Length: 337
Image: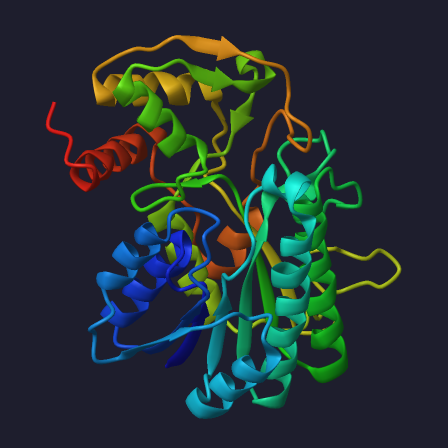
């Protein structure tokens, strides 16, 4: 297939691009290479496949409608995987405009381009953060998500609503994927795995919020990519059993679907830190701090809808995933001891 991947130099986007190329797809990537974190990491990810004969890269921003429309016209993608977004909950407290441009303006540009270029299926990244203040566990796509606790979460909920509008009005098949705490090789340096690894390696104290009482549904990046590919291949269809008098937020009478992608096995944060210490071969001081604004105490994905519709659910154990992450971290940073 001809697949457009936005955010193709990002953490998940680069991993997805590699997998698509490996199975023979022709991939057009686009990434703005911004400096939210060290752009050198994006360049290193991109270097893994930039010379592939079936890959073409564009340095551009999805918020630039003119450039994006030109890219769609030239490449004529059959499927689109939209992973470009301004990420991070805490950064949204400092720079909300970045989220408006990338996650709202950029997303409507993607929808318009898909609409006008006969794209067969749009798969886009949502987030477990949309569950916000919900306390019913596990989180299910059938749950209402009307109480976000960060602008990042609100922007992702907005993406889901915008996608449904285009599915309803223009019969554009769309599938939203709510990612749960993705980690693994080539991850973002603003996320806890690399932050923890950096400090543990240097023997510095680590900050542990909510006094260590968090739990997270940590999901290994390879499992996320497998879920993206399976949903990309399964074009969203209208739910023939949809009942408008008892609406299901995860489906519609339009060609629209939502899925959680998580491990369905929440892990206490302190256990995650313990595994990091074990694999890095040293222990460090933990500074127990209060809950951060915009954060939530626990996440846990109900993946029954994903399992039912595409026959897949993530399966990498936290022990296996952390070991693979630390192995990459040591190699990338040339750490031998």
